[in-house]
Image 1 (tube, chains in turn cyan, green):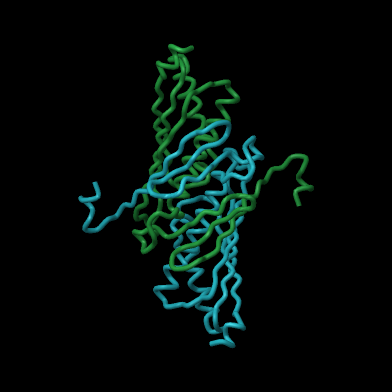
Image 2 (tube, one colour):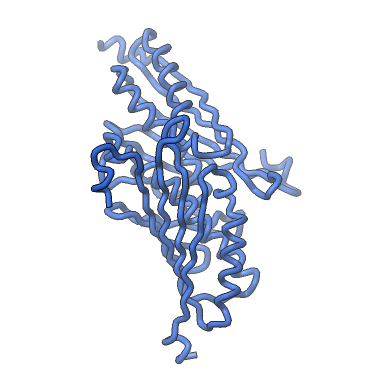
Length: 157
Length: 157
C-alpha cells in the first residue's frame, strides 16, 4: 500500500485498536506498543485511576509541543538541560454540548546559559505554531514557557 | 477551587504531566494513573514501539466514541455482547503544514438479536454526533459500524 507513495510520502496513517472489557472500561492497543487500560472518567460514571479519552486528548497536545520542540532544538543546535511540562485542558459547555475550549501548556525548561533563553523561547513559539495536533483541533492552545538557567551546571561548565 | 462551582459544575479540568528523558523520548503521567512512555514516531526521527502524540490523538477519538456509546447503551437499556473498534487517523499536508484531515472509526459490535441491530446503529450515530473529542477537533470523523448477531449466544438464550 505504501509502495505507491514511497518516493515522496504525503500521507501518514496512525491506527489504534480498542476492546471493551466491562462496565466503562476498555483496552487500548497499537501494534508493537504496550496496551493501555482506558475508561470513562469518574465524573461521567467511569472509574478512577485509569486513563481517559479526555486526558489522552490533552496529553496528545502536551507531548506534541515537546516532540516539535525537540525537532527544532536539534535542528538549531540548542542544548538544554531538562524539559518538563504540565498541560491542562478545560472542558465546558459549548453551543453543541461539551467541548474542550482551551488547553494551556506550561513547559519548564532549564538551559545552561542566559544566552540560550531567547533562542529557547523562540523555538517554543515555533513549536506552538507548528504542532500538528494543535493545528488539528478547535481548542485554543496556549504555551506559557518558564525558562530558567541552571546555575550549578554553569559553575561546572 | 471546585467549591465555588460545586452546585452545578460547568467546567472540568484535565491535567497531564510530561518529562523529557533523552533523545525523542518522554514520560507521560497524570495523578494516580500508570506512567506511559511517549516519543516522536519513527517516521519523524523518533523511536519504534512507543506511544506517540499522533496515536494518542487518534486513540482519544476511538475511546471517546466507545465511552459515549457505553453511556447511551446504559441509558437506553441496550445489552450488547462485545465491542471492538479500530480507528485510523490520516495525517497529511494542509495549508499550514501537517494536519489530521480525517479519522475513521470502525466499531464491531455483537448483539444478541436482530432486533437490537437498529437500536445499536442509532446509538452509535448519537455517539458519533455527541463525542466531545470529535466536537473539539477539525479532523473529519467518520464512524462505520459493523454490527453482527451472535448466533451461538442466541441458541443459549
